[in-house]
Image (cartoon, rainbow, N blue to C red; front, side, top):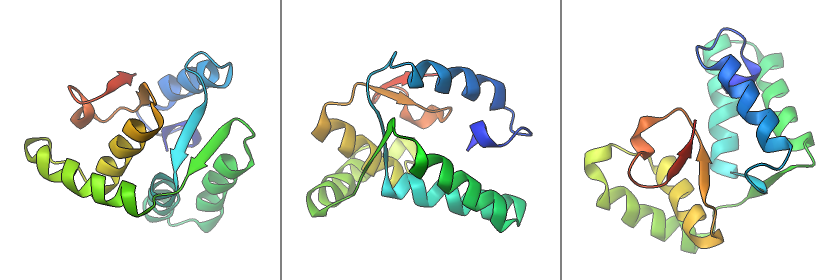
Length: 125
């Protein structure tokens, strides 16, 4: 999670984007339980520091502006179809769940630095 890692190449840009998002510029901020899992796990694996992984998790969980959407059976099934449809993009299953959630909830923008989403959803970067 670039916003919590000062060494990340996208850190400064992530801070600016999050400030805009927290001001409501892009509407409600959503994440998923799968993204939460990825963010916390990646923080732990990259830093080998549990305190930093917990910091990332606490940042997401404590924000009153971030709404967590949980992947259910319907989103899971749709994500599996999306992953297969966009094989050329090499989407992870988590990426596909993000797209499925966006479809279901009418979420218009995705804040990401991952170019695999280009051409599928509108990216704010």
